[in-house]
Length: 167
Image (cartoon, rainbow, N blue to C red; front, side, top):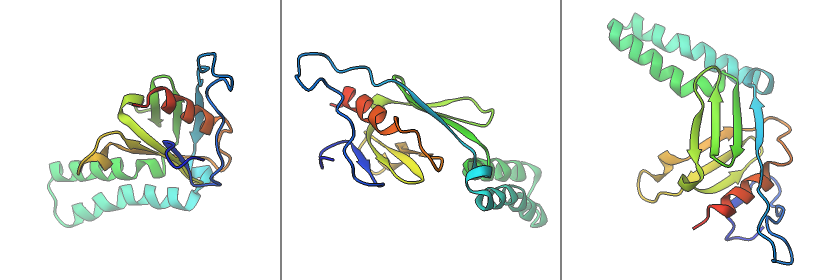
């Protein structure tokens, strides 16, 4: 894989498929869509149990410490938001709109391609970095967990869409 490519592979460093016609006389094909489901209870049961227990245990500790009702609700919501990805199954998608994910029955979240600058495909997750620069740029990124056998079309799909939306 070229060093200047916006897609980095932490698995094997292999180059992805080319999005354009080798002869260069046709427009690139539409990269398509890839969707996968990640179930933490099947992929990482111990981490799922720990996350689920923490969601109940941390607010219970707050109640024992004497936090008010409103503070307990806020604590419970914050703990759930931080740890939900560890025990709630999620569906992830890479398509023309961008990168999206749905955590359980919650509404789908979307990160459009114009806000994505690079992607890193690892063994356990694919991380999308924000296009923004500066101190808060890291907050714009997102990491989506991968199942033990990630979809084969994932890398070419990401490369194709990033190539279409590159500056």
